[in-house]
Image 1 (cartoon, rainbow, N blue to C red):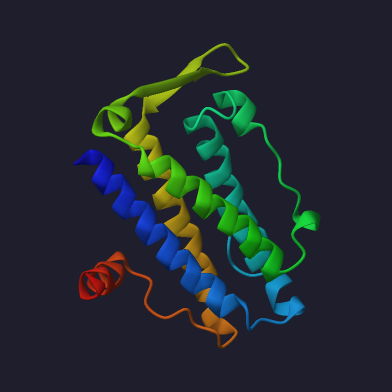
Image 2: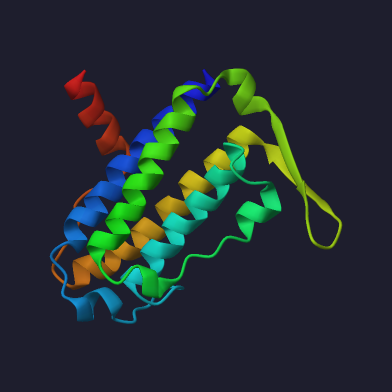
Length: 172
């Protein structure tokens, strides 16, 4: 049941982020990089932050990299100059996340994952709690981006989980 809940969270994450990208497609380059009242400044910088955090954790969870090594990965804003390049990065995240979640079991979700930090301290949590953190992190930044998109006349519409669940049930 826990693995199914995580799959649902990441289904929602994919759906809501797609709505953000669909709305952002209509932005000018100036709007994409306009500084706004959000912690990462611009829509482009916030999207890259959202996506890179997701990727870092996923590389840790799927065993591609160790915890600290994954956390230390950097993704440069200059490498993602437009919505299309960010969307391609996102599509890679979706593909990797779906592959990871396809094999996720309740036992896996409950597994404790830890890493040694540079200061020698251990950091760790059950996998499902880390997964929940990443999906909540994405929700926070999507909402910030949605405010800016709406200000530019490109609202993504309703991105609440409830609307995702209603759409999912209607398709089933």
